[in-house]
View 1 (cartoon, rainbow, N blue to C red):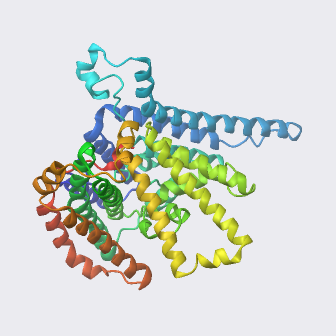
View 2: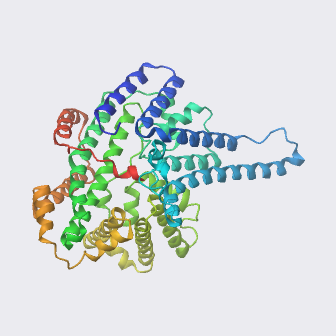
View 3: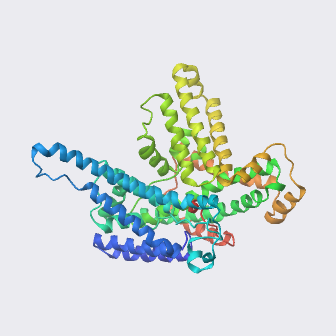
Amino acid sequence: MILPSIAYGLFLLSVIGIFWTLESLSARLWLLLIASLIFYASLQVQFLLLMVTLMLVTFFIGNAMSAPLDWRTPNPRWQVAERRWNRRRSQLLWLGIALNVTLLLGFKYLGSILRGLGWTETSWLETGLGRAFFGDTLTDIIMPLGLSFFCFECIAYLVDVYRGSPAALKFADFGAYKFFFPKLISGPITRFHLFIDQLEQGQAPGLEGMVEGVWLIAYGAVKKLLIADHIAILVNLSLDNLERAGSADVWLAIFAYGLQLYIDFSAYVDIARGSALLLGITLPQNFDAPYFTTSLADFWRRWHMTLGDWLRNYLYFPLGGSRQGLARTCLNLMIVMLIAGIWHGNNWGFLIWGGLHGAGLVVHRLTLAGGKVNPGLKAFWATLPGIGLGWLLTQGLVFFSWLFFRLPAPDQFALALARLWGTAADPQFTQKVYLESLGFTYAQLLLMLLGVFGLMAVAYLFKRGFKLELNWPVKLLLIPLLSVLAWLLAPAETLTYIYFDF
């Protein structure tokens, strides 16, 4: 039951229909929880018990942390009791964080550890139970879908409760929040209180809200099926045949992958937000034209925005943020981005990707500091040439770093790097990849990709420059057209969302 599909559409319609016929908040919460469990079971039933257990443990730890200090404690013992209470809350917080981090790192890195120990094959892998949790070898561990986002939300919830936010009092409240099916697999990362407050209000979307919800689903389907999955064909063919690719081919594939990743991920978020909107819930935005930013700091404010918010609130600020001097600020930025790389996967490429972004953020911070000393430098970045240079440097780093994101294994990115400059393509590459497989020349493919980027630029200009957006009657007219285009022009096989792997 993937997004988008006919099965998902029927499932969503059924949930919406039942949801709005129920008047009780409790009944609606239980409906969302049960429907979300069914949704997850349709994708990976073997990990359902694990996810439910993690949710229950987080729920009980949160309640234990929020238990108040006994007001009947006499004054002479109050300070001692308060210290014990705070120590107990701190211990519970670290227990919950350790559980989530251990589980997440275990699934991401246990395969590498077993591979290092030489434990690669066992006979029971051929059994049905083995195939449910492992691939071809013992080191090929299947990752529970949505575990990264699930754990990040759990950690955020526990930290918020520790800082004073009310804990979930009812299991149905927390369960519906944690397993809410539109955001379950790939976010956006959502905070408990922002989610549950909307459910408690129980405000049904009006006509404009319903149109917006369906529009987001149709728009996301077109982005995924019509654009991202077609670009993926070029990316996969090119990067799977690096031995024959020339430098121009590798650069084209990197540019294409940057577009694919953004369009693919934002398409999922659009469908998730549209689905939630039809249930009266507004999920946070995750993207705001990140490829038109002129600094890496601004890029991270507009790329995967809920992850950036999580990294700031639960890593960067606790490390000291920018309050402890320039050197410590730069160190904190590098630590946060390296952790972001580690979160994405257990290959060196993800660590390099995080390191490149960390280094870019450090350079940006040093440039800001230099601007305070040299007003001319600060003034330059506000000029048109400075803005253009900032955009080129920022997006050049972003797109170059996607190479390590797409090819995280050292042998893969080493080969790609070796062919980035001054390498001619094998004549068979152009014939087999471009002409026979795709039916286009290199120049035609480049123009099409630039056309996609140009459409993104026009949309950005209208929204940010002219403050113009489509109104709901226009969207209502376009929804059938988008739906038909997505249906007729989709590839024969719908590809898995890239961020499902994280």
